[in-house]
Structure formats: C-alpha cells, structure tokens
Amino acid sequence: MSGERKGTLLCILAAVCWGLVSNAGEYLIGIKGMNAIQVTSLRLMTAGLILLAIASIQGHKIFDVWRDRQDVINLLITGFIGFGICQSAYFISIQYANGGTASVLQNTAPIIILGYTLLHEKRAPKLWELFSILLVLFGAFMLATHGDIHSLAISALSLFTGLLSASAVALYSIFPANLMKKHGTLIITGWGLLLGGLMLTPAAKPWPLTGQIDTGCILMFTFLVLAGTVSTFALYMYSLPLIGAVKASVICLLEPVVATFVTVTVFHTAFTISDYIGILTILTGVLVLTLTPESTLK
Image 1 (cartoon, rainbow, N blue to C red):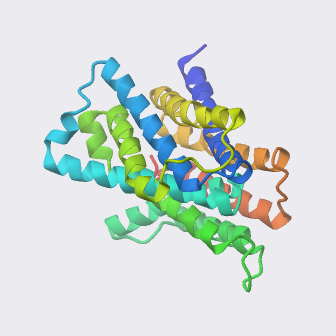
Image 2 (cartoon, helix red, strand yellow):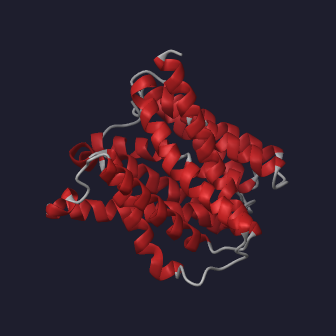
C-alpha cells in the first residue's frame, strides 16, 4: 500500500471515529441520562492521562512545559478554553439537539479561523472567502430556523453551545501552535485534555455518577475515550505527513456526515429537508474554503 493511500485510510478512520463521538455522547446523555459536563470532564481527564502516559513511555519529558511561566499560562488557556469549554459546549449542544446537528455546528470552525485571519491581516475577504462565509451563514440559518426568521427549529442553547464549541476549536487550532512546536503535539494535547477535564470538575461533580451506569454505559464510555479520543488523535497525526493538512481537512468533513447518518438511522431522529439543506450548505462552504488555491487553512 502506498504512503498516500495508507494516510488516506488512516484519516478516514479518524474522521469516522470522530463522527461516532457525537453519537456515543448522544447515547450516554440522551439514553443513559448522564450529565453532559460530567461525561466531558471524565472523558478529558482519562484521555489526557493516557496520552501523557504514552508520551512518557516514548521517552518524552512531559513536565518540561511547566518550567516556563509563559508556557504554563498558554497551557492553562489551551486546556480550559481549547479543550474544557470546547468539549463541554459540544456535549451540551448534543444534549439539547442531537449528535449530527452538534457535529455540523462545530465544523463551522474553519470559517471562524478565516474571520480571525482577516482581522489579523487587516484585509477584506477575497471573493471565494466571502462565498464560503455566505454559504456557511445560510446553512446555519437553515439549520437553526428552517427558513422561518420568526422561530428557531433547534433550541437557542444548542445553537449557542454548538457555535461556542466551533469557536473553541478555532482557538485550539491557532493558539497553542508554538507550544506544540516547542514541546510536541502529544504532550500539549495530553496536558490540555487533562487540565480541561480538571477545570470542569467543580461544575461536573464527577462523583457520584449520574444516569444509568451499566455494562452498555461503561462500554460506550470506553469507546468514547479510546476510539473517540486517543486512537483518533494517533490516526490523524500519522496521516498528516502522508497526505498533508489540506487533504486531511477535506476528509474530516466525513465526521458530521457519519454523525448525522447514525443519528438518523440508529437514534431515529427526524431531519427535515431544511436540515439537510443547511448541513449540505455548511459542508460545501467549508469545502470551498479548504480547496480554493491559497486557502487560509493551508
């Protein structure tokens, strides 16, 4: 198997697993009755500890990041906003809507990154950038209102937390870049996950556990941590040098497609024509932004 084909397969597996994360959350929260923030906190802490253990076994110095005051400040911001706020908002969006809708809303993050880039570079958007922004805005409008400006088709809280999650993804994509170059992606991601989970504990109150804790619940949470966090990170990171960031970001658009498909077929959530128009338009807008020459995401 060629390197590019192998990288493509790895990235597809990562995107599918990421898509199933929202469905796993939907199962734990919607069916088993677990608290969204509690699930988030436990997932982040467990996954963070596993990644740090892997980094330590590989011989990395996982505590060096704590020696520099500015690195510590940046790490705390990354952990709290980039992971804690991001994932808790995402799971709250799932709780008040569904996995497919929450996944699509979170995938508007590239448009937020574009907005930051335009402000940072102090320039107006190019024609293709403006087109992608309009597509995503129209898609979000259709998803949220079904075309009726006088009412919301999904709860205001789900819409807000979904877009808040996307904003946190955008921050995570930009803010810790220097930290990752200095200390390694594995270490910063591990600490970020752990810190994000720890910072949520006052709100999460991780003990006693809420909801129906049984074998199905434990198995789904295990999947959420191992397949939905640790393995996807490894698959995605291994795919990047083989296929590049642009192709990887396009393949990752499979995530909301998978999440929506499972939401409809397994959880029997009804989606309207307006929902599908909104989802398709948002994904098209992100695709335009990603594939256009001189793309901001490159």
